[in-house]
Image 1: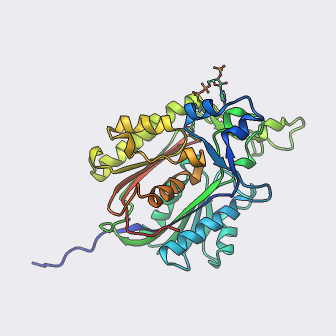
Image 2 (image 1 turned 180 degrees about the vertical axis):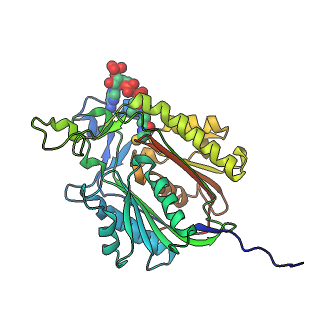
Image 3 (image 1 turned 30 degrees about the horizontal axis):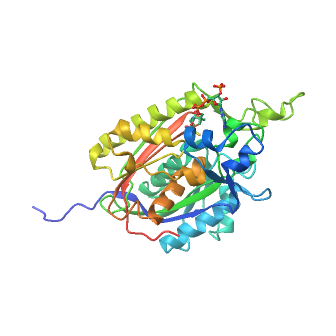
Length: 340
Ligand code: COA
C-alpha cells in the first residue's frame, strides 16, 4: 500500500492583478450639460456618478499595455507564454489587438489573440487561458480586459453615453495545484444567440457593410435595449453563479465576495438577494468607473483589493453577462498578492 499523496490536479492560479484608467473623469454633471439627462436620473437608475473616457488618439491597446505591465509586475514576472485579450473595442476590426499588446510588452513571439464576448469577455478570456494552462500548452498566461467604449458611443444617445466607460484590467495566471489559493476552481459559461439585437453595433461587419450605398451613421455606434438586457442579466448571472457553486461544492452562504459585472447597482443588489447573501458582499465600483464591459471585473477586483474589501483567504465568485448574449462565472479563494 502506497502512502504517497496523489499530486493535486493541475490548475490555473491567479498570481498578479493590474489595472489602468484613462486620466479624464467624466461626471454626470458634464453629461447633463449636453444631453437630456441628470445626475439624479443616472445615480438613481444605475448607481453611476462618473466614468473615465480616453482622449481621442488613445486606443484600447494603450490601456491594455498599462494594465498588462502592472499585472506582470504584481506577479513578479517578466514574461508570459500567451496573451488573451478580451475587448469589444479592438484598435482595428483587423488584426486582433493582442499581438500588438504582446509586442509592446516585450513578450516576443508568444501566441496572442482577442476574445470577443462583450461584457462577459473577461470571464471567457480567463476560461480560455485556464484551458491553455490545464492542457499543458502554457505555464503562464496574461489575461487582459480592455475597452475604449467612448470610441463607439453615440454622443447623442443618452441611454448609452451615461453608462459606459473606458479602462483596462489584467491578471496573470500560472500553472499550479487546484488546492492553492488563487486556483480557478471551475467555470460555468453560456450563450443565447437568439437576441442579437439587444446589444449591438449594427454596421461595420459583413451583415451591414460600411460600403452600403446609404449608410446611417448612427448604425456604426453601440446600441443597447436596457430594459430586457437588465432582466436577462439578473437571470443569467444568477443561474450561472448558482450552477458554478453547485459544480465546485460551495454553499451560497460561504461566499465572502460576489464580483458581478458592473453594469448597474440594481442588478448587483438583485443578484445578492437571489443568491441569499448580504448586499454588502456584492462588490460595487461602477459608481466610480461606470460599465467598462470586458474590463469591468478586473477593475472591480483592483478597487476591492486596494480598499480591503477583498483580502487573502476570501471566497470570491466572479460572474459576468453581456451582448451575444453571453455569460460566465468562475470562483477562487483570494491569494495573498500585491496588486499594481
Ligand atoms: N436620462 C434620463 N432619462 C433617460 C435616460 C437618461 N440617461 N436614459 C433613458 N431615459 C428615459 C427613457 O427614455 C425612458 O423614458 P420614457 O419612460 O419616457 O420612455 C425612461 O428613462 C425609462 O427608460 P428605461 O430604459 O426603461 O430605464 P431603465 O430603468 O430600464 O434604466 C438602464 C435603463 C440602461 C440603466 C437599465 O435598463 C440597465 O441598467 N440595463 C442593463 C444594462 C446591462 O446590464 N448591461 C449589461 C451588458 S452591457
